[in-house]
Length: 284
Ligand code: NAP
Image 1: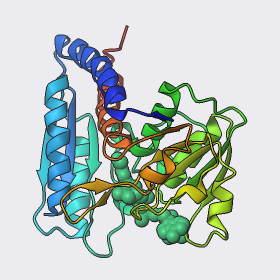
Image 2: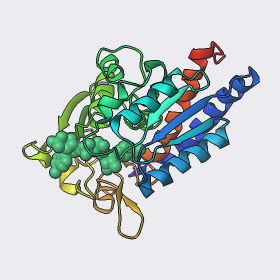
Image 3: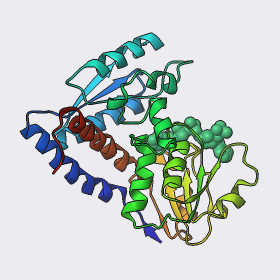
Image 4: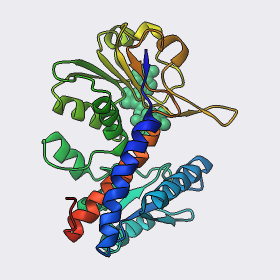
């Protein structure tokens, strides 16, 4: 079994992003990511601080826009304001959202040129149509890890467990674009373990701690665990039962230290790309 080291992949990305951010700064442009935080959730606050810290290290500015008990219209107004601000190149909106508010609805108010986390339904549509766009960073991180591991996707059988708009669906579209044969599973899938055992590449994006056990995994399969489930002691576990699956898998991502660090770096890479496109300061 190979452990797929997300922190090492993030470090390599950090150098690439840092160089591109440096070129922009030399040209007088400070690549800027705005993060709208419509919640006082502690986990979200921790995550946003970690994005800001990483952004600072690679030469990006991160503007945190915290909203106190906002309604849908307050969040929409903030997203529109940031979309119109020429100093901002990327805009994301954190979850959890207030009761009854959907990210897909809010995402439509992020200018597609700044939609670096693929939250605007237009971005998902472009992804489905095979047009240039930014996919949601978590789904892109799945593909980035597979690519960096040299996992052959052409003709491979990929199974994605989870069909959310932010992870499962875009991950499936990205795998399809690499010519994998993709099955998407969800809570109504019959005999889930048997379907998962067909996978050469298994992506778990369920949100249920350690649900994917050894009986879901064909020996030698590559397993990407997107799940981040908080534990009572303040830690994190994935959707995959690492202890029983790792001995079987050909390669596997740990949690923490797998998909998460790469996701953060892709948010920053996409912001730099958005700044390059907006200012015509390109990479060499
Ligand atoms: P979500 O919106 O709750 O979607 C979960 C999906 O899993 C749904 O499609 C659901 O099916 C399916 N599901 C639930 N129980 C199932 C079961 N027993 N069997 C089969 N499928 C089942 O979650 P999400 O936003 O996609 O996130 C998934 C996980 O990824 C979470 O742990 C989240 O914290 C994590 N995450 C990690 C990152 C990162 O950067 N590492 C980023 C985002 C999310 P239905 O559609 O039928 O309900």
